[in-house]
Amino acid sequence: MKLKKVFNNNAILVIDDGEEKVAIGNGVAFGKRKNDVINKNKVEQLFVMKENEKFQQLLNRIPEQHFIISEQIISYAEEYLGTKLSEHIHIALTDHISFAIERMEDGIYLPNKLLNEIKILYRDEYEIGTWAVQHMREQCQLDVPIDEAAHIALHIHTMKLKGSDYSQTIKHTAIVREMMQAFLEKMNLHIEGDDIAYQRLVTHLHFALSRVGQYEVHEMDRDMLKMIKTKFRDCYQITVQVTDMITKKYGIEFPPSELGYITIHIERLRKL
Image (cartoon, rainbow, N blue to C red; front, side):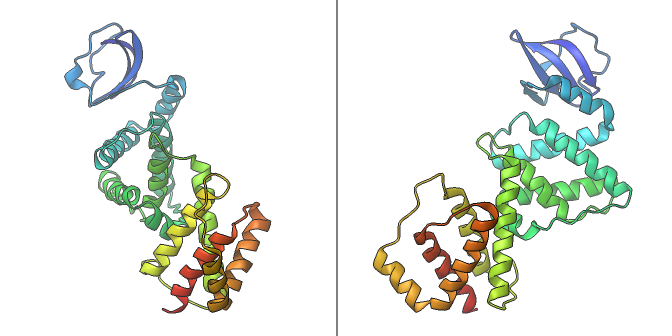
């Protein structure tokens, strides 16, 4: 493993087995010059980075401490999840962490309106986010809000090797929140996000949005659907109203069976 380029004291570009790779480790570049042999024991992370130039541009414009904090969060996340994340996480999360720290140092705090939904839908990622928040508080001596855990959770979720698109994840989470608000408003209910019935409906809506137009929908027996329409008439009408709103606004159409399943969930909410 030979050194090709130094990004900063803790990140370098190396040639390993004839391939360019990014090597990350505490002080891995200290006292090193081009073509020097790198001790593999000093390397904590080694990966192929397709965006080397973008990575270097980012590292050139942010404090090295921000990069170190981000890498510590990434390492914790991969250990917690037991899997490697996409190499793009080293750009996406580092950029986010650096910008967030700069904002908070300027006294600018951005609430995450999707906090409750993210906490429910991405439990493992959110746990990583809460660890990251505490880590940032200790390293930067900043009052980092818990909202930041949700921002980090989304980045972690979308950078799993089989993860989804970041913008699509945010869109679906925002739609779930919009639907939940509409359901509660129409039923004149106020329910906390940690209620089990609330969490079940949030989770169901999330997977319903993922299935629509992409996967085979679980069909409900016609007689069962007819019974639900009759027995839970008011809740079914609310379901129709809310899903029609989403169809008109986002072009997402829910099949009849899905309306039946959603109706069952909001009937549970109504009984609380």
